[in-house]
Image (cartoon, rainbow, N blue to C red):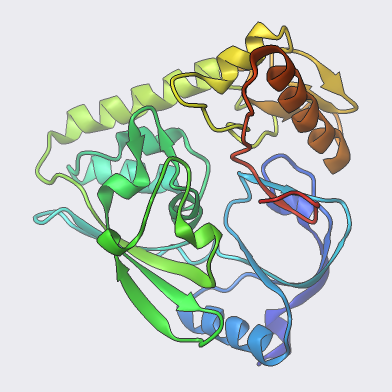
Amino acid sequence: MKKNIFANNINLSNYTTIKVGGVTEYFAKPSNLKEFNNLIEWSHINNQKCRIIGAGSNLLINNIFLKGLIICTKKMRSVTIDINSGIVEAEAGLMLPTLSNLLAKNGLQGGEWAVGIPGTLGGAIYMNAGSGNFSIADNLISVTVINTKTLKRIEIEKREINFKYRFSPFQDNDLLIISAKLHFEPKGNIEKLIQITKNNLKLKTEIQPYHLPSFGSVFKNPENNYAAKLIDEMGLKGFKIGGAEISTMHANFIVNSSSASSKDIFDLITVIQQKVLQNKGISLQPEVRMIGFDYPN
């Protein structure tokens, strides 16, 4: 393993969209699958804990020293589009807005919703990300993964993956997502698709605080309800702990309004959960992944 593939003691606040995070012992940003494989192998041989992050948009990392290796997939973003069949093959680090715009420009219909989600494809599959009634699982054909225990690469058909609302089995198993095959409706009206995609982004930026560091949505929507509505009804918009604030634009967003610490944000998440549980009897579940906290994730 070439030593220069690693960096040591990297501050992860630069790799999360909410701009907080601890320091990681080892850090790497592979450019391709071969480098990624080498890193997984290295962590396996050296018995190092290995975590994967994408765009860091759904991630709260505690402000502590994290032992082991963190791999950021953002450089692994190759994509091929077959405009006739509508089949797309893409690596895990491809950003969803990039994918969404590419689909529209190639006349592929069904990915317009993804333009406002600031995550990677791998992260989106891991979380089964979505917007409204759409989710990434709807378009999946298969996912290619590496098993961290056996180091084998396998392609898993979508029918073998039990996706649920904002959940995939990848949150609980030893499989790391490296790429995916998807299908979108081909031969659509390009101008119309580009316009819909632009409008979707415009709508998102009007109702969500894109101008400040945030995660995107903090909580999953409970059945037949909306997390934002419940938080808003508690009068919590604008409520702050330290530099962390519940957005005045959208109650299911926490923004880093001024040098928030990971503890500020974690405490704010806890306060929201407690208030909604006490007053509404509903237990809000975070969508956000947490690293370095004693939180059942």
